[in-house]
Amino acid sequence: MRSTMTMGWLCGMTLLFMTGVVTADEKLKGIACRSVHLGYPAPTAISFYNEVKIEQSASGTYFMVCGWSKGYFGIQEQGQGKKVVLFSVWDPGDQNDPKSVKEDQRVKLLHQGEGVRIGRFGNEGTGGQSFFDYDWKVGETYRFLVTAKAVENRSEYSGYFFIPEKNEWKHLVTFSTPTGGTLLKGCYSFVEDFKRDKVSTTKTRRAEFGNAWLQTEDGKWQPIVKAKFTADANPVLNIDAGIEKDRYFLATGGDIENKTIKLWGTMELDAKLPHQLPDLPTAPPTGATP
Image 1 (cartoon, rainbow, N blue to C red):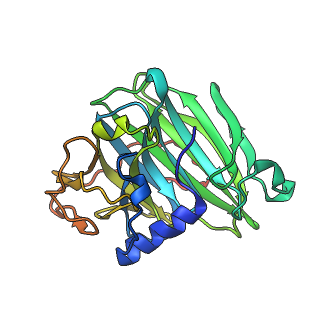
Image 2 (cartoon, one colour):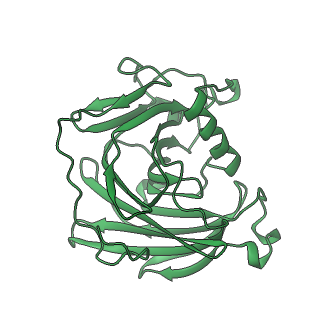
Image 3 (cartoon, rainbow, N blue to C red):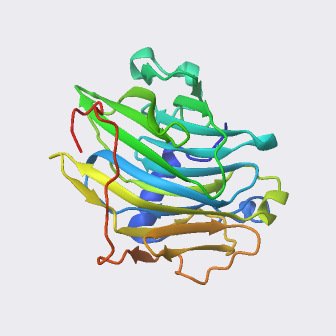
């Protein structure tokens, strides 16, 4: 499934989180809802846990829950009501033809869960991707965990998704990619309209993200209590973000107005609210125990 998240785009995201500077791109106006993001200022990590509750969705939407500098993980509503969990990791470099990437520079598959489809993608950078068909529901909370392990000059990134109907974690996939040993950096979430057919701009997408945690290299867990609200180059202003109790929200499209927090603003959760790390898989690839 196509997504606008390229490696160059990620570099731009880093610039946004740091400076709040972006050049408007009028070509996007009237074609797609503006992509909106939460950037989490945080240290390097070996695990990133986050949750999402979809409140409004539409065909051609990606609710990305756990993103970092080398990949992203979330859920999509594709065409004709099809819904999936998606986990992708990039090859190094800026190629767009997956066949042009040398074997030793490609993402390698280390684990494939039952029912998970694996493939390679191009035209947005190149890399490995996985799809798990799952009929997620509006109003339900879904849980995601990414872990990272450095092995020589590569990194092993694993995606876990909690299936509430079974009350269990599913290890979807583990991908290895050449990174020089990079762990989890530049963590973020976003809501994206990838349908881009003009009509999609009239549909509101809204989701809550929260109870996010990072496990640092020393094995300690800490809650993510700050987030920066950013957006792509689409100049439209029917976007919003904010905090509701202990959760951040992102909204874009339709009749949404930017009236809660200004674009490029930083939000901070109430320090008095309790932060509870939930039960996680008992043996993440990192070997660390929550």
